[in-house]
Length: 431
Image 1 (cartoon, rainbow, N blue to C red):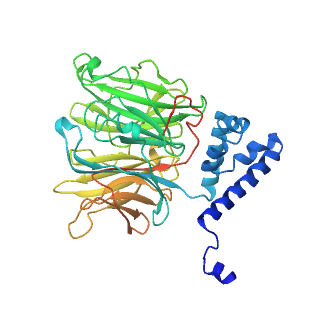
Image 2 (cartoon, rainbow, N blue to C red):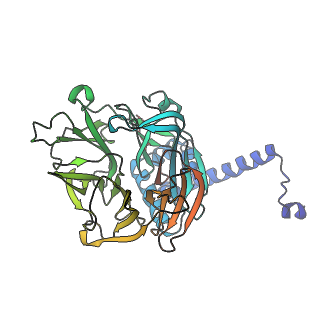
């Protein structure tokens, strides 16, 4: 028998193994039931999410405890503190595979759509697979465009927008961990009401109000003459706690907010790249929206580079999640490079630090596309131009490491934290 165990041969049939697992589960459940009620939350808060979801069926009191908003937040805080010390970190990968992309009128359209799988990966050396993510079948019926776009993640919530192509108003807060999602009501600013527009979106958490909020900045394209040649930008904020959009706000600083160049949630604020247009000059900066106070502020970019038509910018969260990073990519006939910056001290302009300059690599002299910083802080995720494969670049050693993943023409890589958020929401749709 011991030889069999040593050789990892199971002496149990599948049926007997199932009975054994059920028996162990019953023993643990009965033991927990026998404990004083006041210490139950302290024990539950240390359990994994899959176990907690199962334990909601143990009793009404356990169900009420686990679905209590305070418990959900405390469980997440405990996990975040643990993760800062030793637990593994996760990355959510969304990869859109298609035949090509087109840009009519500057809007990105997917042509020949094939598939767009979601998957979770460990943010480790090999970026090994943690799990495949099942997409809700009900959401597929709601889509107008071929697939959703991942705007960003926050505390286990994935913010999806149906905007890869035509104007659309399907926005979703989705927690794949608890298999629930919330469809947001349609905002009041639409093409039918305000004409053509450009839009930027963001998701963040209001720590004081204990509420998750979506902010939508809509730049109206048909009102330039009314505002002295400038477009007016309106802001709307959706509250998950209230389940509705707040009043329209017109106090956005006069600027153009650039879509699809990365949005970040750092230090209680959502950030986007924006631009001041002063004559022929184009001055980029970071527009920040404080989720708690619902107020705007401007964060300056490094002054050591100049913008022209060949320069592309992308905003990112720094590796330690405490500040912002910036990728400056230039592809012109005379110059080709990728600068990687990080703001060492949040909101302190002088703390912008250039980490490295990357020049074209390989025999074809291609320049990879930047996606995000990794948790280590000294590595960034890039996408190759030729086969769209994902690689990690070590900023210190300047070495590349392939993930062995071809991410498609459109992809996103976001940090992800498993949580119980939405488990308590009665209006959330289960699947």
